Image (cartoon, rainbow over all chains, first blue to last red; front, side):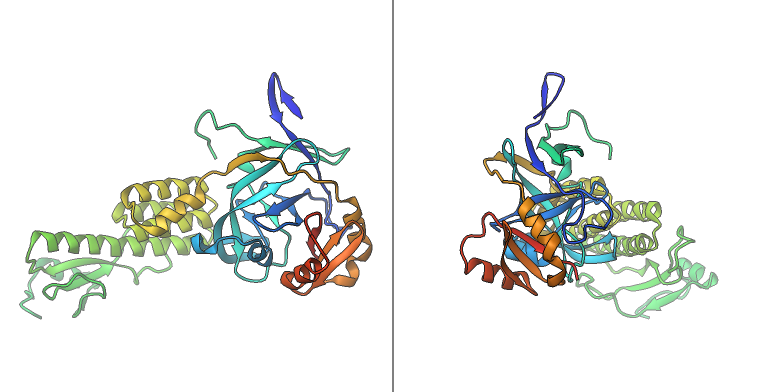
Length: 155
Length: 230
């Protein structure tokens, strides 16, 4: 639990990986565990502050029971080029090893085609709603709900 | 042509500039009413557009308008058609990577004729351009103007900032599962795997197969799902 002056900054902790677990030699990234909608088991997702939206593997999204009937089709520019898919709304939970987990009603992009990359946690519709910090030496990801913005954000 | 004056000054001007062609039928979707005739000329003001010569302003050459209501409908139709054309230019500029110009065209399109469909298309273009702030702005404005439009209602919901709440879901570290992946993933390239502690519960080419196998062996609540890259 981190504080900022007298104010609580984060409320919870989980561990993170600094590499893809099945490609240990690849470049360093931050992976945390998440639960998606109704799927009981956890999976890893990469924190990507440069990604405008969170992106989930379509098979994962389907098995988790995300509601595509309320989605809208669009396309996003990704690392593998332009990808068509649906923007949907769904629940992503960050389970905590210390403190409480966080349940985020998130905006999620689900590609229409096979997605060869990892799951991504992006800025809009997810990271903009939480506070987070990392402690690289002990692989701790500190997080908590962000307070409502005090003034209009300039993004 | 249906009483159209050959000396109509607008037509003469268009002819003189070599930019004239006439349509004998109104475009599809045009409000029902007396046959209208148009002279069309290239859009001005977008000289850098790769589609100059294909986009057109539409001028009414003779206009047997029958009522104020129909006149309003026709004007709305023309404005929306023009807005769609400008929006199409914006989408092209977005694909070409001319972000600022694309955004200018989106704003121009909404000024010209902000129907619900034009708002929805503008929102999509803003998302493609990573301008969620503008997408949210247009979604809110469009929803206020067209509260019964389903697409704008959905966009508003989809683009709402995330709602966050605390839940009593705790987890243990997954060091055993990660250890299993690091040691064994090579054998399961291109597969989904479901691992609990250091045991493989299920695997398959599809996640559905892997989950079925894992669930047949019991609860997967504490398990880790992973797609091993091919």
